[in-house]
Length: 397
Image 1 (tube, rainbow, N blue to C red):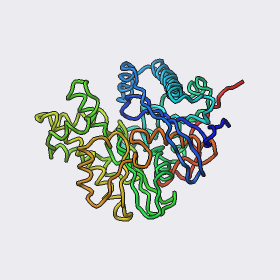
Image 2 (cartoon, rainbow, N blue to C red):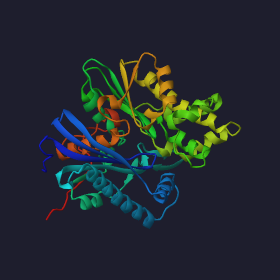
Image 3 (cartoon, helix red, strand yellow):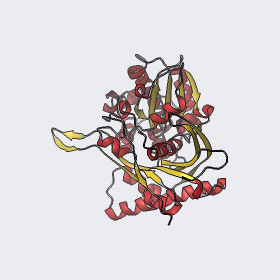
Image 4 (cartoon, rainbow, N blue to C red):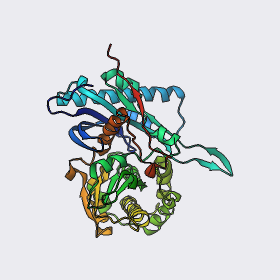
């Protein structure tokens, strides 16, 4: 395999675009140490925004709008080329040769994810399924680097939900002999990884708690007529008031009553859910709706901890990552509702808040190439650990 240079270790790039569908997160890392306790050094991270037209297409696609097979195929290939270009640009900025990369791990762009079968009884039964776009063969061909992608389906084939997959990486990065730890990622969806004091991989619990930034962002775009995509520092929410009856209606969503393992996406908290909020709060100010959506994120995180975690696992610290970690209003409310828990941010551990998931897929790709499992059955519900992903070998003839 290619060398990472005099400092040792293996260079890898992790790629992901989350439920916000705003661009490609790319992380260049050096991985060293043992598989069970790797050292991961972040060398560079950058987000490459999507072209406006492509983002609109992705939002329509993820929102369930009809699309032709020709358009779907084209988007898949356009994304693959953009993901490959992101690797090129990231490495060029760091003056790293593509030939020095050990691997690329690409999660791709999720446009549909249904972790559990649905329907039955009164309607047709739909199997669990998932779809990530961003053709990985184009990434491997463009960069000349072995690429691992499509991580979720193998876990789903074993009865799991294919998500969340980052908890294994949280365990490898944040496990502590004396501190009970919850790694909280607030992306479009919020999810937690629970790592007991001195716990083994088998003891880790993880699941999606509900909406993270997804609902807030949608309301902000409407409030600002598309001029802003998110509530910077929580300023809009901090000038609003929570609407109790709207919050209560939101908290009645069936997903929130499910026991783990569970995973969510736009299928649960996308345009239809936002539409219900707008109708329920039609007589209220936009900033009040945004304050309510922010409170919804906080309450669902806290209630998930109180219901499914704290009764059996002491938690000493909460390590927060994702875009929501930058929302000061949201973070303040979390601290107020969890007064006995130390709140920290992932950058304090060398993992920038926006980079953690991209870093995770670089590490998961390396595990795949080593023949090591990338899932945690207790988290996803799979019947056993599995080597994840599809491997596209680079052609270097």
